[in-house]
Picture 1 (cartoon, rainbow over the protein chains, first blue to last red):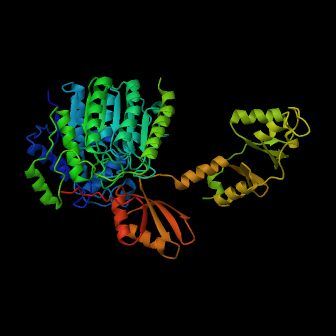
Picture 2: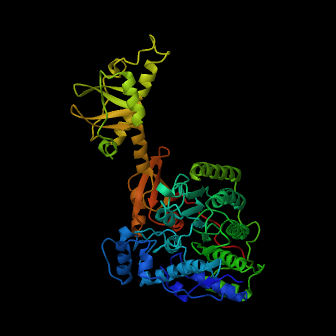
Picture 3: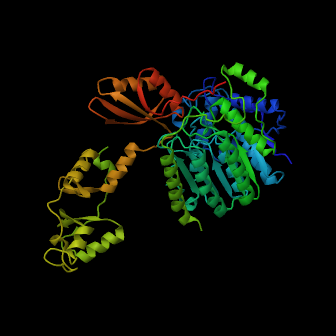
Length: 378
Length: 213
């Protein structure tokens, strides 16, 4: 049985302008590549999320300001809500456009609740930086948290897994005191990268204590170290938490080509990550898992990583080479050559002199994180 | 940041006649290490958990004191104190120089609060911490007028908010500015700064933008 895919052409309306890295081109390239591979997804179009659904997570004062900004009206305090900033500039109907993305993630959650599928892919969303009353880091509304709230209100225990290179701060803070929501974010350390949080001692509060996990990695972390600490921490956490469903934010910006961060994953690591996530869903969550997209700002790398995600979920073989027409079409459009294989070419970046030290430090952080949260696991 | 912004009040005190045993019990119960000692309501000394443990130990000079000994016999005096309107770095300097762990805060003869080493660590975290989602930029500047202004002007022109700014001297000619900026895309910012001649220490430039054909 194929994995249902949610997508809508309305998703392309979530755009901050041609110079902005969070570009809808990423989706266009991805869909075009899947089509060129003869794998055009038969997607389902989700309904737009309603204002009430957005309000299940976001404050009235914030939603009202997004709506006002959407209409092109100005308010003096928009910047205090993260709106109209360099990262999250105002664009026409940003409220409506974001609600389309929220609708997809929410519909994915409803599909799990209905039991009609156990694995679901939302080809969009993953707006993990948005907070209850703050737009932040390219994110207006938090589709992930709105879906998590819907699932937990129906009595499901949700494990949220965030492989975006940036800390999943919005999701973490929104569910910080909730016992039924486990959050796990693996990211480049906040000492170096936006948003600056995600330290291992952020472990939740009140009933949520020990259920918010952070794995901040050293800059220039490579495949082997990343996969080592990912398995070392996530496996015991899921084994203990026994979620009813996983929600995975599949940001592709930990790839070595990404222009915004300093983690050095190759497509080989992503292939293993996607396979591990499916195994974990089967072993610890009765196979139930929702995948969303997220960050990923190198158009070439991002479309390859998400193509791998799509093909592996559909149990399709991964091609070696990418179709020539697609390479030519997008190479011309972007004005530079594209990688002509799905996987990264070998020897893609120069050797990292601090590799051993980076591996040692990551291992130590993983160990200390487990020691910090495990006393609360009972 | 002033002492009054980081101090704790009201302050728990003991009268000079209170026994070592009673004072120590209060410290354990309240999880504190320093208590100002008063005579007729005026602060006349400070007593620490260490003072009490040492005075009652076999290692005490002149032999161990009994648990019923009044605190006035082991307290330190005269008291080193601070003013609520002193800057917090003044409290840090005094505590560092005198090697003491707490500073009663006096307004004239009235004690209005207390600052401990932990409060100063808290202040350090507030000064260096992350309070809004932000990226980190580290730029080496020449130590001369207008350098920092050039940096902040470039940020202002791009509509980028500065959440916090720390500088420290690296050698006699240069200093490092660590700026927390309200943007996720610090790499683009760094590239623009480099083009304008700034020495950006973080984030690094990424040579690997496009693969070979």
